[in-house]
Image (tube, rainbow, N blue to C red; front, side):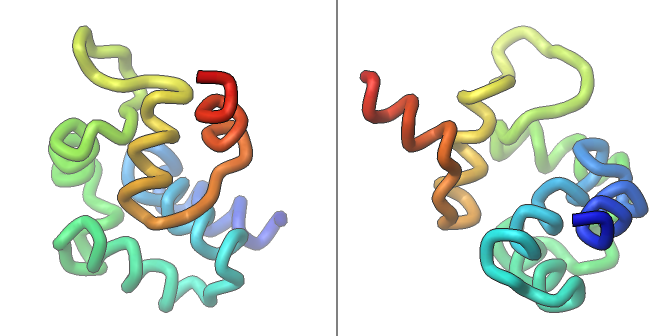
Length: 102
């Protein structure tokens, strides 16, 4: 866990793509390079753009996968997680539980 956290923190977490890369490392047991490539492919970006705060802000708004500051109309919380689960094709327990309730 500390390794994934370090990688995510090093990429800026939710400010860039660190949270997405860490999620792939933890859920799919991917190495960091493989996780970065997978996320970059899903977001149609280059791997180097994953750590660019300006690019990722726009990408996160476009895909509606959550941003640091609250913007009216943008997904946050469980709604953002739902979009992440669909985009990365992963199961997220809290999302699955929410779908069961609705």
